[in-house]
Image (cartoon, rainbow, N blue to C red):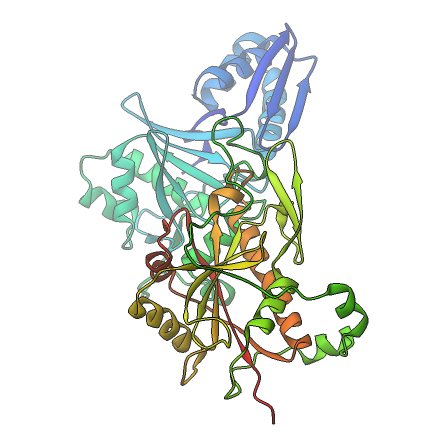
Length: 474
């Protein structure tokens, strides 16, 4: 599967322009790199123009250069071709009957495409991390293990990928897919292997061997890790404000229409600063998950102080793009997409029920919920925590995703989980300082939450759960 059998072209997004008869300006937006190639011979200029406008084999490009510059120009051509490859400027394609079949594109600066010839009877299998999705009007094969992506221009390419769910050799592919030319199937298998999408299956094994480290990863966790960090994708990343002037951002504070609100106790923070008995170092050392409660429940004053010290809005800030705020815990971009909902099972001074916490007005806003859904939330918390009875207060943390996604790309969900972590730690430290019983949960049912809260799963659903109660003494 020699690389010379593939068609070459400047990769998607790479722009190349002729500035004068001997200079080419090449820009690679993915890496923000710009290359000015000066003093090029006419043959090299012609080869660059070909790479810009169409796909061509290495042999054809050599012919273009040698026809203009003579044999002496070939060495210069290979110098630049190697430079293009090392700087991830090239895409490699397969054509069948004059029509595009599949193209592998670089998506990271670690991309290398170095296909090797292999025994046509050697068996390979698709990686369990490979996945297909739609981009515009084409199907794309990607994997968090790979530094390139394969655009499948033909449905036949997708049929080969589907077949590779079981182990196959180039010869066996020819038998089960007789409508695909053997040379094309072999080239595509070579592309899958060289790109890291398929692995060799050793004789006697059912699937490819994986390293010990790789075996620890599940598909969705590795994909999330790769796509929310830089390095293995070419997607826009960070605060791009992609919906600016297209969609209005969500408001800073979520408005709940409630017939019943409970104004919460507001502690004197200056007094607390002076009079808190526990030193910060001791609070840090004593922080722990506590799942045992006093026979007497937490009360409204304690709950109000806890929420005031962990989640209230301290200051609203208007910016050019969207309203942000300053709160107790840090959050990416000061956007604060997280919302708190309280399932009150036992709290002196607060009736049992389901409430939304308003961080602006520091109050609980009751949401009318039947008893059975309320019990379902508590049962879910019991199951996640191993409690025999209900938590006194269950705090469900939801995210208004659109508020964060409006500004950030690629890193948004990862950023949101970090925000949950900082809120968890803030809750733990405040609860410890107040001698309460805190416990974050490892998981929860987001669909259950949306049914209870009446939200849309894709717009706002739960991303964290935290139990709180009065600590048992002794």
